[in-house]
Length: 242
Image 1 (cartoon, helix red, strand yellow):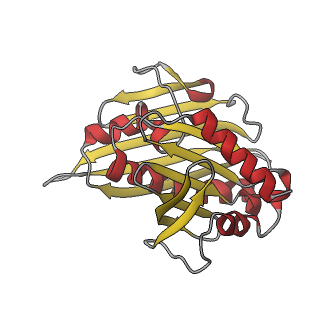
Image 2: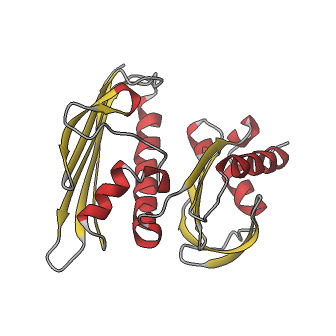
């Protein structure tokens, strides 16, 4: 059964409109995943979509009908409006809308919660790493990570204490990178975000939505090797859930 949805978020950030524009157009590997937009109205957008508004650095809208490789949606639109604030910084309004055709409640709940995590990661990028190129990788844990406590299993495997709240600095052991001090920049029952001096580590508790746990790494260190990072995490996750 088809049903429309709309997810709206607004936030203020101590960054210029130009920095936000860079982040949402050419710097997406630093907080989301690599995305390419043809820089003009009517240009190509991800998933077979079309750029319907291109007004740098103020508005970007992309619309997709029958998104390529996305079976649960028949329409998807992302709209970003960036407004400068008096005295510096800017306000960002983000609207994700579309039509879901299957498992509506679960799909909407997942999209709604993921939105908060992604936009938080955008703010982390703009605050700590803006303009720096990122080596990006993403992967899923084995199917055994669909278990109800899988996100907690990953957190404990990294050495993250159950009591470590947002804002806490912790000593963790990161696959391939070794022991490091990291700030817990995001934590709730669904997601964990860790920030080191050179990287953002994102753990997605998609086990709560019927899928395996996911991990994304945005590595800003010079010479970072995304393929090696992915291989290190895959080996570690396989061992954790075997």
